[in-house]
Image 1 (cartoon, rainbow, N blue to C red):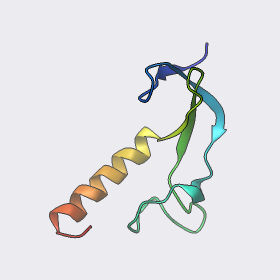
Image 2: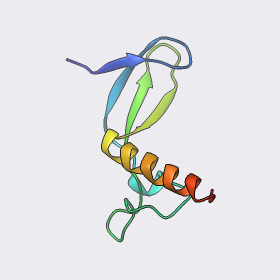
Image 3: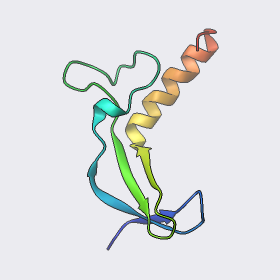
Length: 80
């Protein structure tokens, strides 16, 4: 079965593409504990809309949790 989700742009059907985005292309604007010598960025999944053709990258749930916690900490400290 193919994983699907609703396209946020057109409301059509998005399907999960095979593979992942290169981690080096998805990097938060702060130094994250997700980054290191062997993992230069954040893991993201690629989804494509079969109705409008848009291709979107969604950060993996585990990485998103870490990024959200880091962002909230930075925001509370007054850094952006």
